[in-house]
Every structure is written in C-alpha cells, then in structure tokens.
Image (cartoon, rainbow, N blue to C red; front, side, top):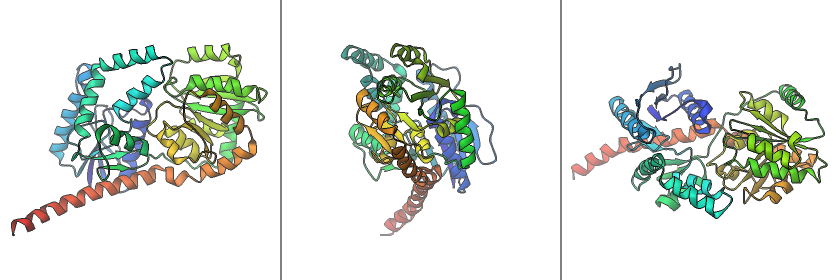
Length: 398
C-alpha cells in the first residue's frame, strides 16, 4: 500500500503535531506501508520514509496553505497513492487528521483565557481580521463536509467539535486516540536521571517536584499553576518546587513567582532534548491547559508512571480516571482547585498508587496502537475502492 502523508512542516521543534506525524509515519512504514511525506520542509529521505519537498516560494503567509495544498494535490495525483492522509485541511485528501484541533475551538479557547470581557472582545476582533486564520478556516470548512474524507479525531473532544461545528458524525468521523512512543527505561537509569536533575536544580528528596512541559506558557496555564504552587506551599511548608520546560519567554512568569514570594521554588529550564530525564525526576506532571486536542505531554508522562493533573479541555484527560491516574479539573483558572490537587499529591502513598495505575495505561497510549488503528482505516478505504467497481459492473448487467 502506498500512502502519502501531507504536512506543511515536519521540523520536530515546532511542536506535538510534527513529532506525532513523524512517529506515525515511521510506525506505518514498519507495518509495511510505503510512506511518502509531502511537505514544504526540506529534508532528506530515510530508509523507511521518502520525503518529497514541495516548495511554495516567497508567498505571503496567508497564501502559504493555499499554495502548498495545490502542490500537494498535484503531487498526489501524479503518483497515484492508495491513500492521501492530510494533517492540515487539504481539499482532495482521503483522510484528514486535524492533530491541532479545529480552528473555531482553537480561537474559542484562546479567547477564554483572556482575563476580562474587554480583552476577550479584542481577541475575537483580531482573530476575525486575521487573514491567515480566515484562510485556514475556509480550507477546514471545505474539507469538513458531509461526504468528504474520513476524519480521524485524536480524542472524543475533537470528535465533539466536529459534530458541533460541522454536523459530522460516525462513520465519517472516527476516533483514533492519540499515541506516543513508549520508552522503556531501566529502573537504574531512571534513578540516575532523577538524582541528576534534582541535584542540578536544588530539589531535595523531601520536596515534591511538579513538572510542566509547554511551548505556549499562557495557553498551557503556567500563570495559574504558579499561583497554585504558591497557595499549596503554605500547607506543605514550602516543600514543593515547580520546573517549567519549554520554549517561551518566561520573564512575566518569573516576575509573578517573585511577587508571590516563591521565586526560588519556580525554575524555567528552557527547551530540552532530554525530556525523559525530567519525567524521571518529577513527582507529578502539572498541565492545566486551556486547550489541547490530546496532549502528548500527558500521554508521555502517564505512560512513564507519572501522575498527571490536567483539565477537561485536554483530550488526553479522556485516558485518565480522576483520582486514579491523577486529577482532571473543570477549569484551568481554578487556582484553589489546582492548589488542592497539588496538596493531595504530596501524599507519597497516593502518588505511588497513582503511579502504578498510570503506568498500566502505557499499551493504550502507544503510537504502535495508534498506527495500527490508522492502518485499519487505510485498509477499509482500499477495500471499499476495490468493491466499488465490482458493484458498478454488477449493476450494469441488470
């Protein structure tokens, strides 16, 4: 089977969608699929993946997706792939997988995190005037139509967005829950990583270490999280430390920590290539996000046995049982609730029970499982195509 996966950018540093797409492509290739990546990024093909670069030239940003979509459609037609699987909304695809969620929900959640009605209004106006966003919404509307491609939702949360915004439902919409690569780390290695990271940042064994991994601090709730750490620190006698890993400007959040008197207990570590070491060092993953279609961070953390605190606006929360694998909050800005859950997590026995339960989720959270389910969708499409000509032939004989 020949499959084209269409994604405008494949640089992993850009975020979860790019990493997940590359991992999915490699897993499909390992399952015998002849995979070609159609992308605007420059990259060399590998033994398992063929990468075809489709340069869009020096076009304005709002027109980039339109130019890329045209080139991707032409390339797909030339090579006659069995399946064309698009990550951005590219008309003409067989499978659409909006890994970043839908445009309207992204906007709604970005508006919701503004602290007052005036700023929410201004954000709505700015988004309505954003030419690039309007162009992407136009493409999304053309793809998300009845009778269009099979749409793979990475969570039930995304499937509900498709129903509410476009009236789409099964069988056109299939939930193929997101997955991550499950890294088997020997216990002695995890212990060494834990000691190394905690020593580097001055966190002793008697202090609970909360880890937040984010590249958009505002959207992922870093502000409310710092406030919650400050409140939790009082009943915990200051025995709590927060490390934030990721690419974003931390200045305003460093100032917030200082104003709250916990500057020495909040560390911004910047981006890292060794996220596994931070998971090993942490006692809890704190991800009070305003919006995530299905956060890789929470899936990775849970699969490593790290209890998680997240929100119902994260599709990954569907994998967690509240109070069993961690906690799921109703609102990202409920600082009191977040502080309460952090205080509860300070109970080492509770954390141990949650850690055992979270680690048991690993097979269900794996990219191997995710790729198998995507491949089943491919096979179903191929089967329908082979049956269609036979049905047409039988009909013509009547």
